[in-house]
Length: 405
Ligand code: ATP
Ligand code: MG
Image (cartoon, rainbow, N blue to C red; front, top):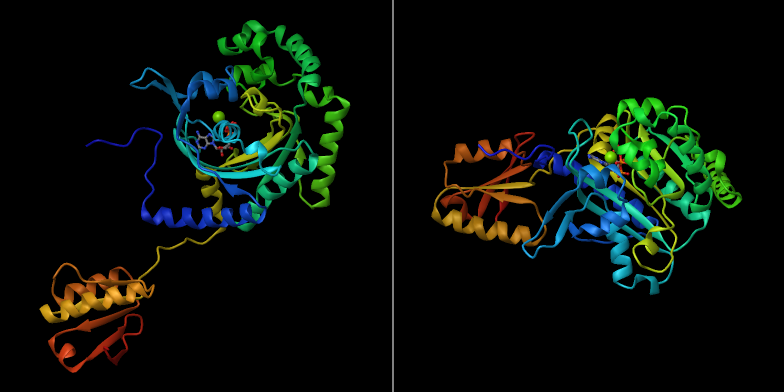
């Protein structure tokens, strides 16, 4: 038997009802914050991610699904949403729309990862991007919105950690200090990190190799190197969060896995599983990097699979919707009448099911019971002739006669 590829999942109807419930809750929050949905392609030119996500990131170096199409173009299945959304923003001239622009997306994403709990090769993200302002209020509003998503899903135990990773100005000084620290033990780091040392030393802090993590432990943190502007920005973000009564912790070690971040970065963490469920931050350099006008932005993405684990912990199971009426028929005339009847009821927006197997009445009742129909109406020759039929309440067993017209 052909099986699904490693790191992918099938969502069966019992799962999709839960997904749809969660998606609709999140959509309500996003729309209440005036975010509008954007849909972008599953695949893009590889170069978009090389430039957008960053050549020295794990995502680009190890995790991308990249292939040549039949026209010999290098194509990549999106490993995340932001690069594609920003490309669409630039390509469609959205800069001329009233600014700031607020966009959200619900996507599948693809990364060739070591498959484990909360780490798949095809996974789902819902994300939001706020493009067009460098004001701290945008960072704070986005974090507040993320917080509201968890609240609306009744998820209680989730920890918010924030940090600032500065701008190119403060980062230059920091990179020097970082190189001095790492340089002492550089021979003990993995080959990827050795490579990153000259190109992008901050990336070393995000390495997942145990040995590298160990040597990174006492590395200098960028918070100590922020310039005045970045410092003030970070303080204002915090003031606003306090104003909104949102609890957070500063974690100076957050650097995030993608290169485009600047200033504020944040993560909502499921402490029990030790997994980040929602992550994001400011990315003031990305629009320009992708050849748009220099435009600041801030965004986040949440992982649906990880969110689901948390949702289950705090919520009752959500069941597949059950039909109101099952129409059981015996004989040709009754069948014809029944077919017209369900068509009419469905046109009125009723959830009704009719036998379409031609099985006996007993089998029809058994099926109606199994699919959880609330009522069964039985139609036979007599019922059609007399225009009267019985409607059985499947919960109580009570029967009542109705005029079938
Ligand atoms: P991590 O450090 O856990 O690998 P990341 O920095 O690669 O995370 P982002 O690219 O910021 O993660 O993605 C945002 C969110 O998307 C994550 O917080 C997580 O919930 C989800 N996510 C990322 N990669 C995966 C994956 N392979 N499988 C399932 N969910 C994922
Ligand atoms: Mg990752």
